[in-house]
Image 1 (cartoon, rainbow, N blue to C red):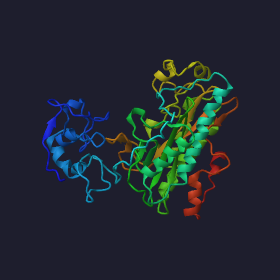
Image 2 (image 1 turned 30 degrees about the vertical axis):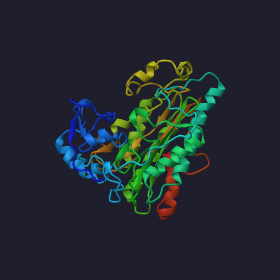
Image 3 (image 1 turned 120 degrees about the vertical axis):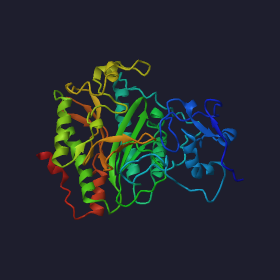
Image 4 (image 1 turned 135 degrees about the vertical axis):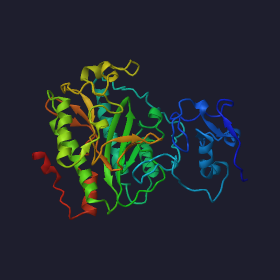
Length: 412
């Protein structure tokens, strides 16, 4: 059945069957609307109850512009596009990357006991057994990352990579912690080229020459495991982008080698900025503080012990992520190192889907490890023991003539 252009209903006079998403943005231009009742929406969708395919608009003009895409919601047609750019009238600025339609939502097996975390730091330590869960969560995060790393190739879409992450988490009886966090719709983050953080997996296929960051976060027995890596895709990655990936890894490792009780977090920040600058790159200012992450603020061992799942957030977590820069590193601190490097202007802005993107359109690389400070240094809880970083293996296969004596940098 073919549908003509629909009559519009306005949120002020008639409530839709389903309110717009938490992001509250127009499906065409991406403009944020403060109150959902200011949206206009398709009456056909309201009558049919198309909840999962619901589109909302900020103006009649946006409805008209988006109709060539939206009309396929109402009918099953072989002519319907398999994928298309989301928010087509949004001013994406410089750069060629665009968010595409998402892949299918991921389900959990019937009878699964996996439940989402409350997305507050529920890392409580009462004894050695519960302490081991912290190590287990990060070991699992590394295992999941290794599985998805082996799937990165030209032609695969990031929705398929997200499926690998989702199923790997289920196989290990842990919850993919990004799923549902602040409305994030998928089980991992996949950030391509100029996307700095929060890229949503979609149906866009990876192209020869892309660089891709995958951010894996798991929730296991009350603890989070967090790791991210950047990969090169194919054999056409530019030399500058390969240098960027290498510099991001080196910057992360440089900081990790400095970690020990008595050092300051400001010292880590300065060292990372210095190393990035010496290679001609810059750390994106929004991500210059290494110890504040989605799930782990900086917590001392005592604070971790005292904090229960049911308790209020500890004072350290309530503070701004910039408040503890001059704090001294202490034994038992748990945090992540995640320098995010780009070249040129490091200014970023947000897409309507929540992804953070460089304003210049320049690519971004990031490596993230979860750290626990011990008496003389630190434990890298997400370390890939006994193996090279995956991007080095990619370099060896695709760029065999390139020097990869990467560990000499740590002697300087």
